[in-house]
Figure 1 (cartoon, rainbow, N blue to C red):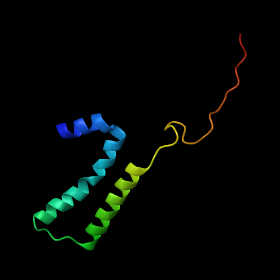
Figure 2 (figure 1 turned 135 degrees about the horizontal axis):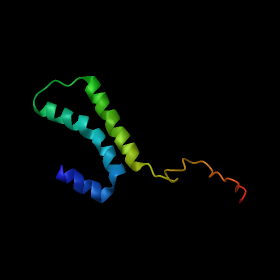
Figure 3 (figure 1 turned 180 degrees about the vertical axis):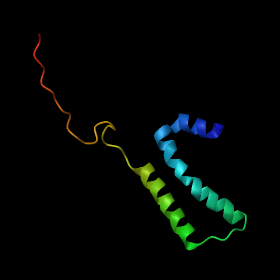
Length: 81
């Protein structure tokens, strides 16, 4: 847990949260080391998780997170009483 906290401090919470998706992959590796059978579904799922993590890490953000690519709305000032 201390290692995860240090990683989060270094690379940021958003990027660290992406790597939580690797938990099933690590679990699969441990089960293989323990001699448990692995089916094709596990292999395909592992590939999809790794592909998703790689895609999320390599994608560059171009817009600020609060804007979502929309133009800012401008409101007209109200009457001054």
